[in-house]
Image (cartoon, rainbow, N blue to C red; front, top):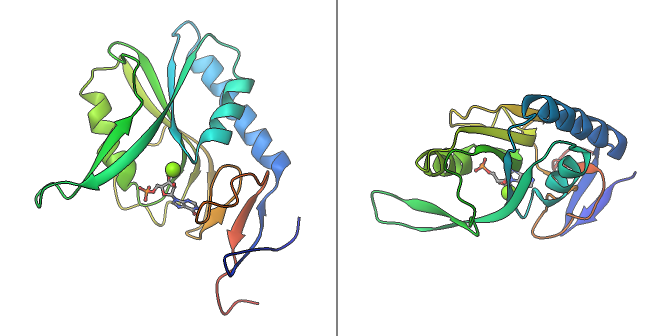
Length: 182
Ligand code: IMP
Ligand code: MG
């Protein structure tokens, strides 16, 4: 692993592939234990979580369903501000044990708007499983039930996460080298 350059920014190796796989496998084992006989429904949020979701699902051995959705935000009224809607959620979540799979919680704004919409549909339970959390960037009070890594408040890419559309196919996670730093 060495420094990579994308759109004029430089990124250095941060989380190696083997460590990511180890943590994702551990999380899948925890989910296996916590959801035995519950036939949970995983809702993976595209695009960023596609690799994380695929690996979690490969390691999982219990009976479970997965669906993939996209969150679109559009300008609401003056009082509502940005509004987030789920595209592609065609499975009824009423009385289901639901687990959200998300790549990263940064400010927490996305989850803060989306989770109440799911609660309204009265799932049997609703939990949040994420790959990365930036606790120092999080401004909204989100209950994170499962998390692989807590990371500093710096931009990262790879393993599904992008910088301006690129970098998703990198197997490791890279962190931005901040300007001024050699
Ligand atoms: P939040 O609403 O601020 O928590 O932002 C969540 C979304 O922002 C994630 O689903 C990512 O798509 C994106 N994001 C936040 N931080 C990063 C990062 O460091 N790298 C790539 N995408 C990020
Ligand atoms: Mg995302």
